[in-house]
Image 1 (cartoon, chains in turn red, yellow):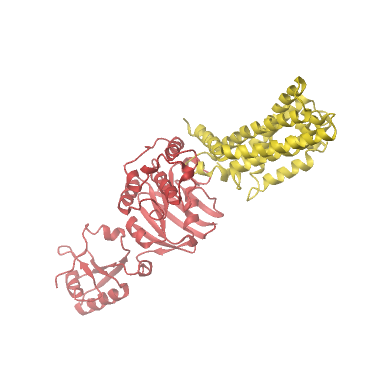
Image 2: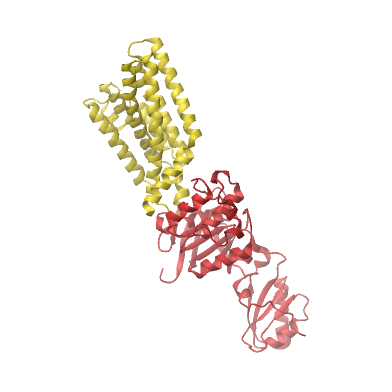
Length: 314
Length: 233
């Protein structure tokens, strides 16, 4: 699509044994690693099946790369999908399955460097029929990640029920796929997994996208995790100095050289730290221009100069 | 290898793996045992023409279509035709070609079982082996193979109807009910042509045995085309 949108869903409805989509609207661009946080009852498993072209939407429109995946084999060949219950084609061993995938999709390497890290290498000689659930999902993950020139990589719970759950390796592979132009979507019930893997996070609730994470439900999704609050003010240095004494603030950072860079405030209680910021700004006579809560692991936090926020000097 | 031929092969390979040696042996053993016992019982009741009665009755009337139905069910599972090839489709296979490959694979297995059923039924009906009984068994075998293959495509087309593939059960029921009736509608069912080939010309009035052979092949192609057309790509 000309505007860079890879996935376009409008009024998408459908259900499986676990949950349903109730009119999902979704647009996902290429080159991003996004995440929808929600359980199977919220429709994550059926959404993964629809995006993979394994389930026909009951109503609504779903387009991936300009074509509906249910009807287009060429589109499905460029979608890497790990489903909740992957259906592996039983054609013998895992190696033979990978060979079949290679023939159907066009060229893609039989064995990639990250196979070892996710535990797929040890399964190559195993018969498909003899794999347990974790091994089936691991092979499904390897198939999803090895799709050549992928339009879309959609992974349902990629760190759960797999042989080796290595978030660091997976994050790196997903970022590589995104940098190659794929749209990467992780569907998980775990906010921690979302934080570890994705740049942009939103919630899927009862079959619809609820809201982007970074809003106040961050604390609900990841109780106990630190949340970053970005504060734009005309006096960042004074505000940061005043906030350093606040008990609700765990850590903070600011730019000593550039006043346009927001003050990053880390805390475990979003509401308390927001109140502290407001009070401090009043006390300092600083103009509070904007505040933004950022999900743990979100892009904003990772792009903050690559450094962790530091406790400011009083 | 092109994606099209890979899709066809994937469908065939999937089915052959699913049916497997164990299922194929089980279906064959059950169907052949039933046909042999029924044929033996026919001969015990009335010796004259027992083989023909056994072939036209329990052999081609029950054992063969049910064996073909069982092979297709093992091949596709309980779902619709497209669901049976969904593991290959998820990797980018063309569903239609994969479905055709699956039906061809299932038809080959069913044809082998059908030939065996027909052969055993004929031999058991004739009693002690003779040149005539062997000749009849061989003739019955190719009729059994062709009929079983045709049934597979017929049930495959049925499997493309109904949310839970109930169409194939209806197809079986229609064949059992309408197939043996000597009516013009019967020409649409494999059973009528098989009966004609087995020596009951009144099953399809006005059709020669050669015409029924072509009829069975045409029906197989028609049902295969219908099944493929009704499958999303």
